Length: 253
Image (cartoon, rainbow, N blue to C red; front, side, top):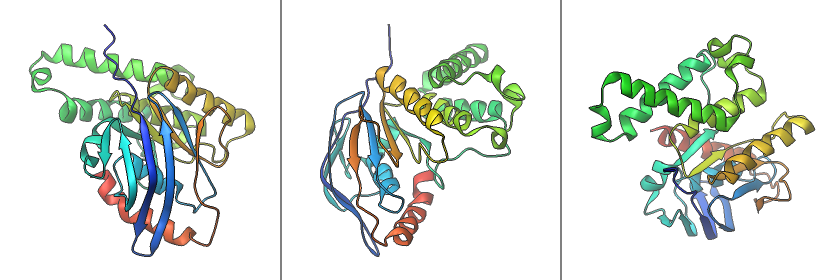
C-alpha cells in the first residue's frame, strides 16, 4: 500500500511579514491545491525568500491569514515545520561543502530516524533499520534523479565539486528522505542556462506530479505554475536580506 502522504494545499490571503524596519512583503494571495507547483517570482530583494520561510512555518507572519495543509499560521507553525522541508535556502538550509554526497545522505537518514521515527522503529533490529534507511535514500535519489555513478567520485564526491544541477538534485533528495508534504527551494534558476533551467523545472514538475507540493523561488516562473509575485524592487534589498539573516538561526533550530 502506498503510504506517501498527500501534498499540502497552500492558501493565503493578504499575507505579509513585518520586521523591525517595516514590511518585508504584504498583500500576498495564494490558492494552490495539494500537489501544486508554486513559483514565487520577483526580483532579488522583494521578499521572495521571506515568503518561502513564512509559508513553511519558519518566519512569523504579521498580516493576513494562511493555511498550509489545513493548518493555520502562525498558530500551527511548529506543526507545519514537521511536514514542510527546505531543500535549498542560502543561510538557512545548505549543503556542507566539505562533506561527501554519502555523508550528507547518511546524516539526513540518521536524523530522520532519530527525530521523526516512532519509538517502535528504534526497537527494530539494526539490520532492519539499516535496510529501511537505505530504501528511503534510494527512493529519494530516484525521485530527485541523482545518479551516484554519474558523479566524479561517485558517492564520495564532495558537495563543493557538484555542478549546480547536481547540487540541486542532492538537496531535493535530502529533503525527500523525510517524505515531506511540501518542499521549498530558493533561487531555483540562479546561474542556470536556459537548458538547465528547463531541466530544473522538469524535475520539480515530476515531484509535484507525484503528489508533493513544491514551492520554488525564481526570477522567471513557468507558465504552468501557480505564480505568486512579490513587489517590485524599491530599495528594500538591504532590509530584506537583514530580515532573512535574523530568522536563519531560528529556522535551523
